[in-house]
Length: 316
Image (cartoon, rainbow, N blue to C red):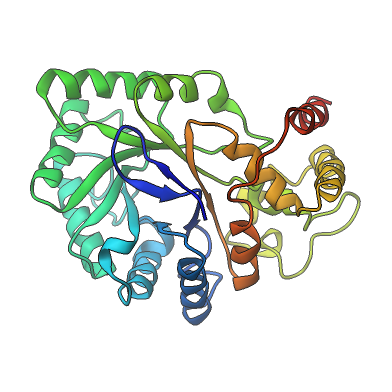
């Protein structure tokens, strides 16, 4: 496993990281989830991602329990705040109240003393940005979190946050978590270059387009019965990727992977990691075999000719 620095910080994370969205606490039972996390740790993966809203806290409980057996300094644990955790008017968003209360609640569920990276899960237009940043800075000062990150923020929103942080000498964010894969490339236009210039890395989610870039789904054929496409809790998230034209492209990409004697998933992950501004690709795994396969992508370098062949297929 290869490791990369996260932004301007001295923190190093594995190129492949393990997430818990749509899996742990939901479609994947606890025993299997812990087995997958253990396998990931054995493979050298040191970056584990979760959020308070994943399975309404259950994912944090499982991830925290699984990691608790390992030395705390040996892994990087990330969680998030923003989404609704109750029905009250203050049970969501990025107010000081919600951030502070949810940080404590996440720590309790995780069974940990601190969170390495704490993300703003979305941007909150209803809360003054200075209030949000000050609350995160306070959490850093109190040792409850070590670093701040944001997820699904635009370059403009990040720019505004950096200006406030610099003006008031608040702790700066070091990582952004957007969607990024061969079919979702929006960050290449503005977010990625802006963040690179400002010392912020990307830890990207859905790098395999919800499984489409593993070769699991084939053009003209029904999705496998044991796939997420058949799971009512996750099928809505996968629907945008399971389109005939994308399945055809995935099949063509698989031929490139075959010519390199690697799996399609490895090709897709290596393509993402060609970007210097990307520190890690967050994969989901409901079986040990999946995380073993995905971890093999670390360190794979794609030559210029291969990258041109990939681009030609994606632009069709």
